[in-house]
Image 1 (cartoon, rainbow, N blue to C red):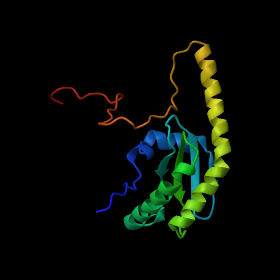
Image 2 (cartoon, one colour):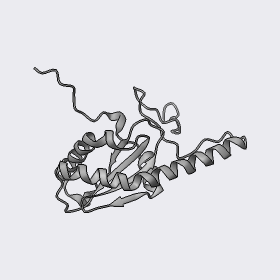
Image 3 (cartoon, helix red, strand yellow):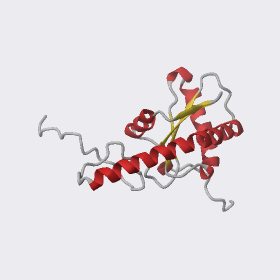
Image 4 (cartoon, rainbow, N blue to C red):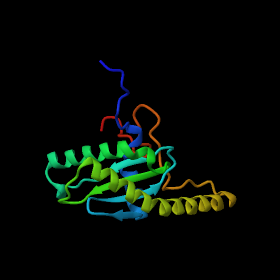
Length: 166
């Protein structure tokens, strides 16, 4: 057995929550090519994170899962070249022939096109936070990202508990 390091994409660099997907889609910072549409958004996490939105229109479950595996592999190989503190959501295009080398080039090119717009949005959000903090309002941002570095189950604090015996 060889002592190679595991080449995986850890959960901490994946976007999994609906709230984070909605935040990225709501900012509408996107670029498209023949293979994918890439959405970007600033994040508080130290790493570049990936989310994949593969709808039923793409094909059956086998096709969707294979597509997601290929996208995760391409992202894993190029994630160190992408800007940190950024969330990326990939939406594969219907009918596109996806191969890891093509996906890698596509992700790098689209991310390069989006990086400046994402950074401009980050500066605008930080400026708005500075103004909000100087005014003394203790309100937190609704669009704030949560980083999944902690282990264990994440409890939904907004859910109401059932009454005993109900």
